[in-house]
Length: 379
Image 1 (cartoon, one colour):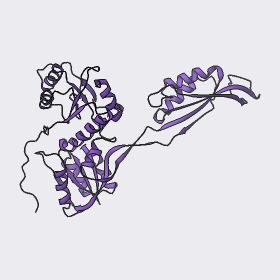
Image 2 (tube, one colour):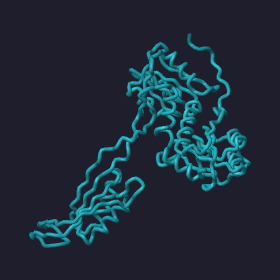
Image 3 (cartoon, one colour):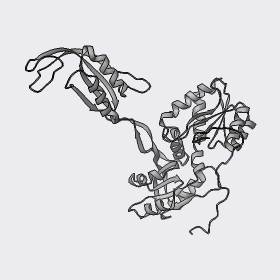
Image 4 (cartoon, one colour):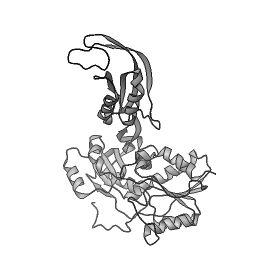
């Protein structure tokens, strides 16, 4: 039987914490890393009803998409709703772990799960997430100063590759130079060719810190002029990306597609809203699980016929519709879109743990809306 720390290690590999937005709060909220985990409940929201469901099921861990806390707190007393959740879980030996924005864009993530729930084919990211662009550095330095220069560049952020740092390659040879009038050579004299045993340092560093690394290198190097080169590497496509783009097996009009979306998502009492010509042909679909207004223009430029997401506001949608060739829009409840992720993460986690845990999908609808009233739909 795995321990909590083993389960979290698998989740962190699937949804790396460093992929989370800088405002987000992902990770373990409650739980002993060494506690054994035999069963897990998956839910969108860490609300009291879900905590009570976990107690009734006798699970050891809840994995939610939304965080319990997004801001720092000075108390988790049970006098607040969130504090009561913490006490309920802790007193029953139940851990809580959150995978939020770090689970939005990768494989087996929220947007991919939503695309598969809608039956899309040839699914790919709507907007690729590229790995941080790296520079390749080559620096020539006298042997005796090589350690100092390398350490200065490391301290500035160079030499990190994945989960490793202080990476470098060294080779040795001889370099020559002739100081000209006006120079102030550290070695040799003006007008004389000087040969010096030198070390060739090779490192990588993120492109965005290039000048910081260069300044550190120059400060540590003994020469007045430093022989070096910097080559920017092509960014690597990660397979992650914001939103998803895919095609329907059979085209349908917008009215039919909106009904298809509503029927494909978990049941809810919220509104499915549609913007666009209801007779428009829909074949290429763009989507983003959760709040996706930031990809509205990208959906149109991608060639999509419709964009499916949540939490769109009046003015952005109105302005979007005024644009030439704007795609149609289907706005669905936030909870319903993200619920499509729960069976996917449950299945994948159980597989990666070798079937050593039981999984449960919360059957509680935590969408906050309990009723939608309209004044009539178009015929």
